[in-house]
Length: 523
Image 1 (cartoon, rainbow, N blue to C red):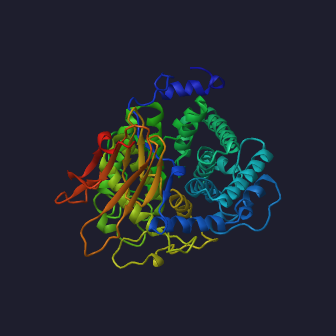
Image 2: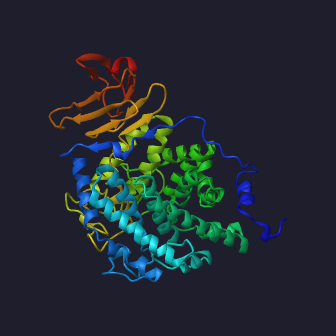
Image 3: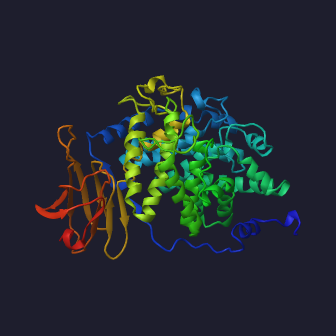
């Protein structure tokens, strides 16, 4: 046995990978989400209005108040007063919403190209960079690093890695979505700091001690680190991602055991999202199986009709949902993360059931959490009991400046990226596009050189038909393309039909209906 001082990341990495240091991605290519920069929601629609309400809230928030605790922690002069709620200066989770804010503003800017928002989010990154540079270790947070001493000592502290994940993901989104290279340098500094920190825990105690310290909400630490590895190609980032994979939970899913009753839902769903990223990075099919069986388990045994999951933030016994109906159901954060799981599975498989789930959860579990057009007023839980009002749930409606719950963070992200799962591209000699959500919008399909626009006729209780019109315009210089259109499983095949340029294409059935390149060729 080598001495502890001989321990290094490569040794641990090889142990985790069973001796293999090579990293090979999956053999089959995945569908790619259309860039938010190329998707625009149609003005006047319910989706567009929800996006605009969220944009108004993001612009209302004051940058100095957001970073108040970060400046104070770094020993810099703080301007103004801090926000309240979960961002209050004495709350151990402080800083989490700022991470969400970085992600939300990056995606909202991509969705709208609002210059005022871009200036504001860039100023927040600049201040956080000043804080990180002042502390000088790569560490960046609104709370002291001693919180991690407590976590590593297995004493009580409120989920410090949860907040770190939000900050790291926010910075990474500022780089990948908004092109801020400074943000990448910052997240690399954070990853290197925590790489050393986790290494020291394992050297001083054991890897089991590290696993034990993760028996709390750690967010998607594995997910963001796998994402970072795809950019840096740094093995220590890959190894650190593995070390946040939570084997005690993923092991249950690997043997397809529905033994999740009593588990805190939003602690564990992000770990599955990270496992999905592990599959995409390494090609290890076990993690594809884990995600698939998890989605099947949740959708069949732990989901309400809305697509939401959890009661009082935890999972109950499978297929016993009626006994859990109350005001404290379907936490918004769980819906946000389950949408990620289903989107990834659709990208891998093109199975329409995942797109159907996405539609159900998006309409019921995302659009429902805003209070009309009042910016910054959202709910935490979505009551499922008959006759229960959102307002009388335990948290009720939040406030603009004194709530900042976890669901406020995921909420501002959700309404910033409403266009991210409508269109999916497939590269190749003949580019293909899958339209899986019916949301009035326009997509600049650069690969094919055309613009795709979809319009929906207003729904009416007196009309049983759901009518969608798609138009394709542009010049492709003779290039052909394939268009796949989702026919939802809730539709009836009886009498359903597709028409292109007044030509009847015949009957359609639930699934992906393909318009071949011979049909949609433009010149």
